[in-house]
Length: 348
Ligand code: NAD
Ligand code: WQD
Image (cartoon, rainbow, N blue to C red; front, side, top):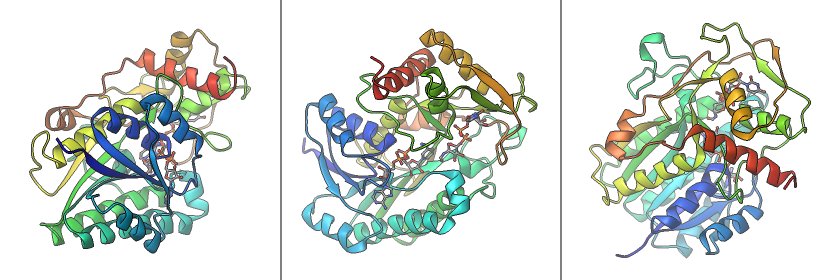
C-alpha cells in the first residue's frame, strides 16, 4: 500500500513529536513544519533515536503564507495535515492577546487556504477542553454535546474561533475539506524512552511539570491552588491524558479520514480525548509520589483565578467511532514524567 504523507505543523513540539513517532509506527510519512518558537531541533534527534529514521523537517512559520505555500510546492503529494502549531500559554495570552490571535488564527487560515486551493484536503485540528469552560453538573463527564461556554482567555478564544473557521470552511467546501477537531483534556507524561517529552519554558504553569520539578528539587514546594472547592478532597479535578495515548488518537483520526478505518459521517467531526476518569490535584501528587517513591512537598495556597473546578471527559465517542482508548495505567504515566524530568536534569 502506498504510504500517505502527512504534514505535521508544530511537529517539533510536545504533542507533535509524540504524534510523529506514532505516525511512523503506523506507516504514515510525516513532514514536520515548525518554526521552533517553542521547541528545539534536539527533538528531531530524539524522534530519530526512537524511530530509527531521521524525520523530515521544514523550518517554516505557518503565519508566513508564502513560506507555507512553498512547502506544499516541495511536497506536492500532501493532502493531510495535523495542525498543532499554536501558542498555548493561557496567562501570556491575557497579557499579549494579539500575539495569540495573530499566530493561532493566521496559521490555520493559511493552512486551509493553501491546502484547499490545491485540491481535496483533510485537517486534524488540536482543540482543547477549554472550549467547554466549567460544565454544569449534568454535563459531567463532558460529552461532545455539552454546550460550549465563553472562553476564559484569549488562548481559549483562539481555539473556539479556529473551530468556527474550520466549521464554516468545511461547510462551504464540502467536496474539498474534511476536518476532525480533537478536544484534548490535560496531556501529561513523556515517551517511555525519555527521549522526547515536555520542555516547559520558565516556571511551569501546568501541574505535572511543576510536580516533577518539585520532586527533582528545582522548586522548593508545589502550591496547590485551592482546597476549598466543591470536590471530594477540595482540590480541582481534571482528566489527565497520557501524551502517547493522545498521539495515537491522531493516527486513529487519520485512519478515519483516509478510510483505513471507517468513513466520516460528516465532513467535520469532534472528539473529546480523555481517560474518562477525573483526578484531583491532591490525588495526582499522591500518585506521582507512590509511582516513583519520591517526595513532593506542597502547600495549600489560595485559588488560582480563572480555574475551572472540575472537568473530565466522556471519551465514549472516540472509543467507539475511532476505536481508540487512553488505556495506559496512571502509574506508568507518572513514571514516564519522572524519568523525563530526571533525564533533562541530568539526574541519571
Ligand atoms: P508546544 O508549544 O510544545 O508545540 C507547539 C509547536 O508549534 C512548537 O514546536 C512551536 O515551535 C510550534 N509553532 C508555534 N507557532 C508556530 C508557527 N506559527 N509556525 C510553525 N510552528 C509554530 O505545544 P503542545 O503542548 O505540543 O500543543 C500542541 C497543540 O495542542 C497546540 O495547538 C495547543 O494549543 C494544543 N493543546 C495543548 C494542550 C496542552 O495542555 N499541552 C491542551 C489542549 C490543546
Ligand atoms: C491543573 C490543575 C490547577 C499548577 C490548562 C489550560 C488549558 C489546557 C491545559 C490547552 C488545576 C492545579 C496547577 C500548580 C496547582 N491547555 N495546579 N498547582 O488549568 O486544567 O488547563 O492547561 O488547551 O487551556 O488552561 O491545567 O495543569 O494548569 O492545572 O494546584 O502549580 O492543577 O489549579 O486545578 P488546566 P493545569
